[in-house]
Length: 441
Ligand code: SF4
Image (cartoon, rainbow, N blue to C red; front, top):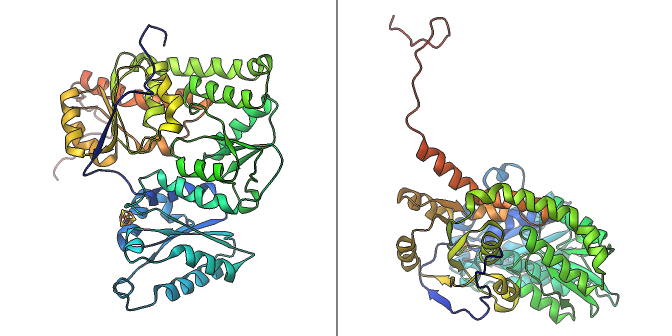
């Protein structure tokens, strides 16, 4: 974007709202984390509500013997009539006997386990002593009281950091769970820059966990990893400050920040990135025609909202009206805010009725929101994009830039097609075609 639009929202006012909100809790992150960590099991200690949430969020995956489940707290546990710890130990022993492939077990806290103050951190220590060295037991909270949607991944990775092996060597750590194919693309790009000792948190298996120390530099792949970043800082690692690798521009800026941290020269950078950059630009341009000039609002969901709005504004010519995010981490988001066009309304947290009032007054061309709001808003004539797809679909780095733009273009195209269509013409049946109406005998 080079049209003279002012940019830079680092010091823009942020509308902070607290009230009723329509978001997932952090348990949902288990759906993609268990696919990434191939020898891990996620045991939610919660209620039937938690089990139902996971079932509906995971969709058909629940039929594929997934590596997650819920230890359901019954009324007796909640009333303190039974020793929930003893029951948990028994459940874990049974599970590990049945699934000897499990090497990491996460006890995931929920609202009910927090309300009855079940000490899962202590339970994890106790169970590690029992089941080490074959299985390591960790704990984090995915409860709706403490976490929103993608924050579940942050809580999980932050819980892993204290147990990572120590190193004194200089290494690069990529932080965030991406689909394997996208992670491999990042490794290829970095190898092109001459950086090939790359480790990723989380590793695909327990024995692939990265080492961390005072000479570790790490780059975040996702914007919602504030606690994990703080934990890595606590281990002496240094964060490479960069925008997130969405779109051609975001990917290039992210790679450039890493290249600068490792002293890679400009010629090497150009050699490694020129061709994929050109491909990404062409792919984005194919969808940008539909998006250019359209107004977009993000309702809070995943913390991906600001980087995605930056991508849509700068590479696809869209105009962000309101960018809502469940939580705005000023430090991690600073490079993104520097790139956002102004003016734009930034909001953090949610008071859903007030936000919907603003949305109805704004009437943007596209509203990015959760599944619970999408259909009601469509019925009001607004065009929506389900935000959850942006978390489950591969959208990072150059090769996905075109797909990312297409995800936003699709609902607008569908709307245009439906608006232009009139009722389908009914063709007369040709005798003998097999399509004749049935006659009454
Ligand atoms: S953790 Fe809390 S918000 Fe999430 S499903 Fe369980 S009860 Fe509901």
